[in-house]
Image (cartoon, rainbow, N blue to C red; front, top):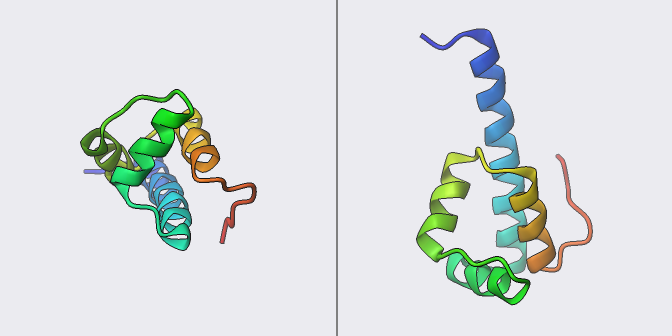
Length: 79
């Protein structure tokens, strides 16, 4: 059974995952392209690992910002 704290955490994970996926979609960036763009800024991860991280939604703030920087996002919509 999920307790209230876990439910709240899951809600935030889902929200952050949605924000990142929306930014990728807005720019037409696939996971394979994201892997290439991340490599170009010094972050080496393969497409499968990136896909899994984003699917889980429980990635670090550092990974989130690295992705946004790699795709050229200077602003993020929180809604």
